[in-house]
Length: 100
Image 1 (cartoon, rainbow, N blue to C red):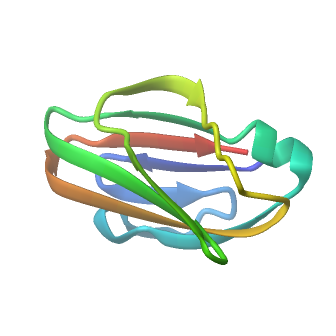
Image 2: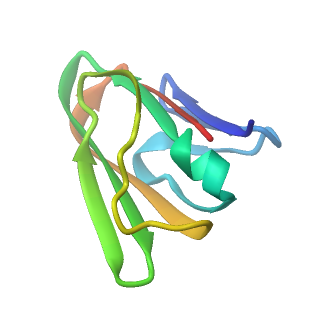
């Protein structure tokens, strides 16, 4: 599958483009199978981390502050483009991995 890692404040995608983790915004295209396998793993020392997913009129905010590797249950989302946005509030040593 495809993945996006955010480790130590740097975002590294499968095409090795680096951007700052706190302002991660990326639109991904997913198939039905990839949507079913959309997995997030995240942790940080302090603060909080949130993942916002948007597709058309569907939007979901997930608190991933201390999130073991787990598949997301996204009711109402379908195959196609999904916008991922990552927000943190004073998070330190954030480690975030998103697979699909």
